[in-house]
Amino acid sequence: MILDELDTQNTNDTDEIARRYDNRPGFELVSVVEVGLPVTKINLTALTLVRKPIPPIEEFILKAINIGLSSLEEISYFLGLEELIIKDSIINLRQAENIDLIASLGSSIQEWKLTKKGKTTLEEARIITPEERGYQINFDKMLWKPRRYGSWEDNKSLLRHKNLKNNNIVEIPYYPARTPELADLNLKDVEKIIQEKENEKDGRRKKEEERDFKRDFIGLKKIERRDNFFQPALALVYKQKQGNDWQITFAIDGRISEVHESAFTRSKGPKKDRIIKELKESFSTQIRYAKILAKEKFGDEFLTLAIEYEKQIDSVREEINNRSNIIQTDIDSTRQTLEKVNDDEQKVALEEKLNNALEEIKQLQEQLEQLISSTPIRFIKTYDHRPLFEEALKNSQKRLLIISPWIRATATNQWLVNQLEKLVRRGVKVFIGYGYGDKDEKDRRDYDIKAEEAIQKLAKRYPDNVVFKRLGDTHCKILISDQRFAIVGSFNWLSFKGDPNRTFRDERSTLVSDPNKIDELFNDEITRLI
Image 1 (cartoon, rainbow, N blue to C red):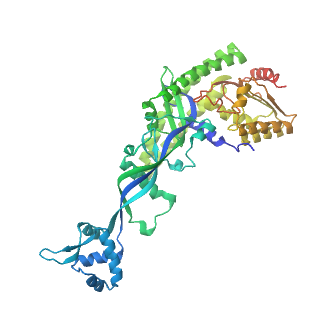
Image 2: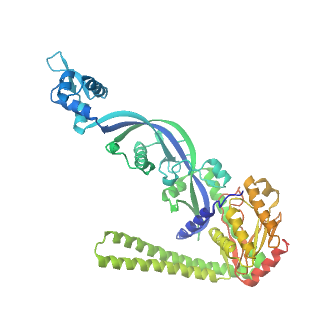
Image 3: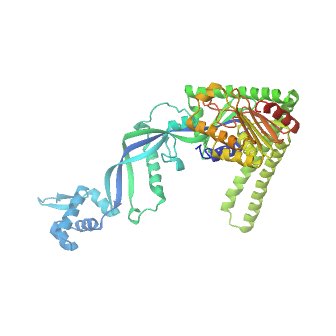
């Protein structure tokens, strides 16, 4: 059994997030990578003061002593309770330092009196007792402070190091590169996080008797245990259009975290230096590689055309993004005003203004998409590939050709195999070429082998419609869907994550929608498969 629809939804979310944030002024989004942000789960012992309602009997005893009753017998008679019950409560009150045996001035006889603490307890009707208690918190090693993680709070959602390795998820370095100690924990931060967790625990309402319960934190005693985890996130990598500056930000739960971007910018160390170096090398390599392949497969004339179209699309995209940002600011302002306005006529006018602004953004996006779809050849970015691949898998009518070096279960999952079978049952011819020498064999895991076997079984069941051939020297990556489009570039269609030794990737390809060029490419490639 191969992995069941692994990463299908996550990949769609990644593409959506990439499109949403491909609008940084003066910068181009060149890479989107699954990453793990470092987290240490800390078990600690805290010193607390517990404030809880005083038991009724103890409260009445304090009141009796306060009005001058001082002996066990007097208090028992006054309250109408057995002396044994009174005695047990008096012991509790004394242990809590609320009462004590004190001799009056000029007297040698000791009587029960309220202590200063006892007077406060009676006034507030609460008992205050010290208590050591164990807690578990998460420490964000990029921000270097405790932090809540919402839906990622439990161990099942946070990732272990082996999860990163098995799924080719990039580990983000942190600075300073050391283990968090007790001195690194701010008491107020810890108390706030614990109180929030306690209030929301299991989503249950607090019991009636717990509503007046309060705990104050007075100190952190020691760290009992530390466990390292990683929070899943997306790294979005931007390159300056008219320069060589790079920016990396992080999307957590689909939203940009500016504090993590700032922390990464400030961080130091060889791991970060390696990431930046690799980004620069990958970007220049992929741009060059995409143009070489475009020239090789489609000719000089089409390559020149692609470069001109890219300039035109970038210019229109930047203009639309700038206009969209202005409109979005106006939308945010309008929404804030709407929340404060009570007049019905004003509300109608504001809602109309809001709807018009939203419609204008939609029209601007449609204008850009229409320009892009009308170009016979263009360069596409990392996040463009997956939607086009899904389009080919769902809607190819006559033929589908896939050339990809690697087959990995993280991409070639049950959903993909099912889509291929649906195409074949509709009479679509499917051609798949794969393999990239001995290295491909060494890096495969059991479920990668099962993914390959799943396609082999499909080819055996439908020998007239499926060609599945190991080429062994396939570094080129190609996708052809009917005469609708052909894509040539660096994106690994059947693995997506590609070479596990690469971390941040900038996948560039050339898309052609000219039917004649598509047929020429198909005829060239099919000779290797049949």
